[in-house]
Amino acid sequence: MDRAQKEKVVEELGQIFASSGVVVVAHYEGMTVAQMQTLRAQMRAVGGSVRVAKNKLAKIALEGLPCASIGTYLTGMTVLAYSEDPVAAAKVTDAYAKGNDKFKILGGAMGSAALDPAGVKAVAQMPSREELIAQIVSCIGAPASNIAGAIGAPASNIAGILTTIEERLAA
Image 1: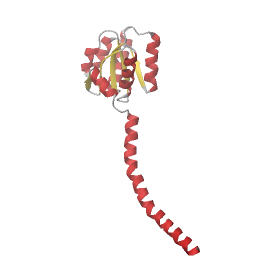
Image 2: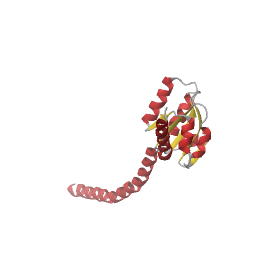
Image 3: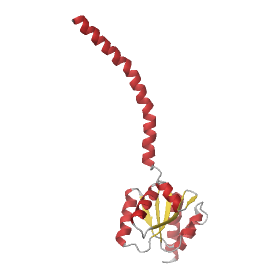
Image 4: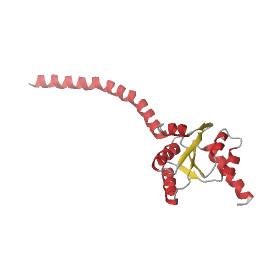
């Protein structure tokens, strides 16, 4: 790899670290190509990506960024899993690590906060962006449906009373 290619990789990694909601660093030593492809497919399914990069280049890309402290995790055979959704990459990597003992989560970063393996696990247990949006929408919609029910109830009561009166007069 020549200098221009290295500079391009450093620039790409810098954008990943700066724009991702969460970045998870893990060891993947001993994994087969098929296992890595499975991880990549699972990450793609949630809108994330997996990147293997030289540790030295990743450390250079981290310089000056708020999450630079994760550079200590970049030793050995490391892989970066990242997503814009602050929870997606953590969920996928945590689930994958449970099923594959060769995949070990070292830590990560969420914005400017560095995460240890327990921190990544805690982030993985948080609800995803879509789940939070659904919860908020249901909270907003519940009072409106209650009001609509309260407004509509007297009208249905009046209609019932009028029907009863009409039936008595007809009888």
